[in-house]
Length: 288
Image (cartoon, rainbow, N blue to C red; front, side):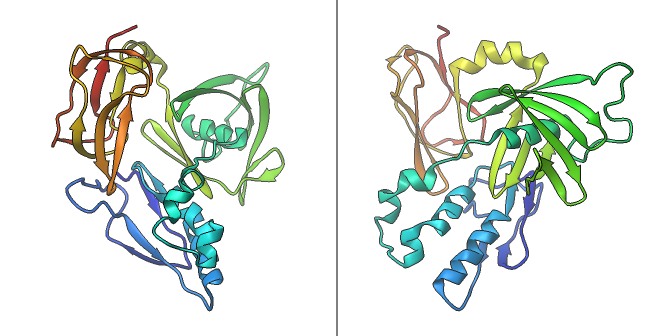
């Protein structure tokens, strides 16, 4: 489901979807084509990279980051292109940069409902600034942040022991005295920080944490909607870390989902030929 979709000016956008639409696995899951031109390949590519940096997509897994990396690739820019380009530099093209502490701080503010800076009473207290703790999940890891409001539109956000001074100015968010250039989006349990590269976070619900601990560590879920091409385990199988569970076909590619630890398969909830949605449980391991 597309929670948020926005395109920049200065590029041709061929698209037939809008925020709130569901990208069905039964059709070509293309969101849009972004087209730029220029008097030379270099100019056209720079415009394309700028357009991709300004594109915002949240709620659905996309190849947005890959396309941005490809537009900046030196060999691609020089026209040194063949069918082996992606395979040769796959690690570079698919490397996902970790969010900075400043970006995590902004994500925490969005999760707390402070993406617009709050109102005139934000941060009011009689004795000392009040602190609020926010827990976020990113790439399977939990990140904790503590927000202390200094007044409307100004916050001190501590991430990994470092305090970041966040100020919402008329031209956007500034962090530690530098303009972030970031756009914040929040919807449901997800928040996104768009700053050239998009970073998406899940907001941890403290009340639901117990249930997540009980089941979440033992369940492998579909990372995106797709077709189950094959299932390689059965209930009772003993598997080693790295063993293949399921092959999922999505975005015209096959993705192997593997074991993250040694264990015994308790349940197999997927079957070959079946369609799954993002987040569907596929395999359950016995608790350690």
